[in-house]
Image (cartoon, rainbow, N blue to C red; front, side, top):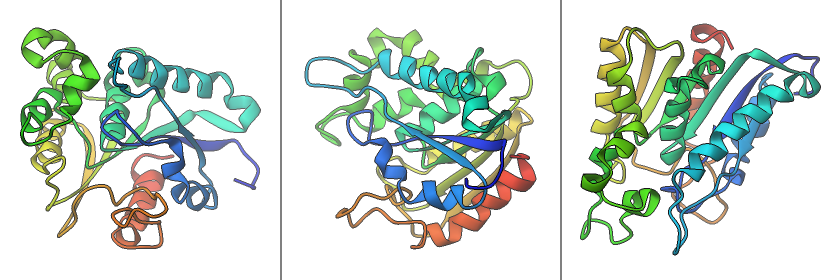
Amino acid sequence: PTSAGPHPALLCLHGGAWQHGSQRQYQSWGPWLAARGYAVIAVNYRLTSDVSPAWPGVWEDVCLALDWLLANAVNLGIDPARIGAIGDSAGGHMAAMLSLDDRAAQAIHAVVGVYGIYDLPEWWRTTQPPKRIDDPVVSLMGRPYGEMKDEYETFSPFHRLQRLAGKPAAKYFIIYGDQDTRVPHPQSERFLALLRDKGADVCALRIPGAGHSWFTFVAGDPKRRRVDEEPNLMVAPALLDFLGKMSGL
């Protein structure tokens, strides 16, 4: 933001099934949020390759990004007491993970999850061949769920939340489309139900007719949308209201 700080900050985590994508996907949201007083830090993280799974390095990268943000907050004009995370799809998975991790949770005060992958074992079941030939969760983790049950559940926000004693500290805004077949919308609905059962401060936006991939922008990809295009035109004021009123960012 061009105004005087310290500003609230949003750590933005792109989607792409841990296989592709980059921080440039937030190129539309970044200026829009900055114009409204939010510092935006969109980051890259290591991705799955043909020869190496991304886990656990992908999680180490996301935690290092948060550590860097906290360490440099004063120099960047950022208020370290007002930090949130935004993520879409696989980025939503890791934004939610930050809010439920023993070490990171104390720094994350708000989470915006957009068609996120919240139950990792369930998405593994949903994406097994022949439904998807790339087998994204096994590509991420290196081996199937049956061989790594503890690791899958440790890296699953739904399972982390199940084991949490008490109420999550962060406040949540869960956004999803009711026609999403890539990450089926029951993922968001089950996570929402569990958040409410745990007493979390949460609100939700279910978008009729919306599928997957529209939240962030990539030039030339017809599925993706800028902030000034639907359904983001509907999402933007609700997101701003959540950040300012509900989460206090």
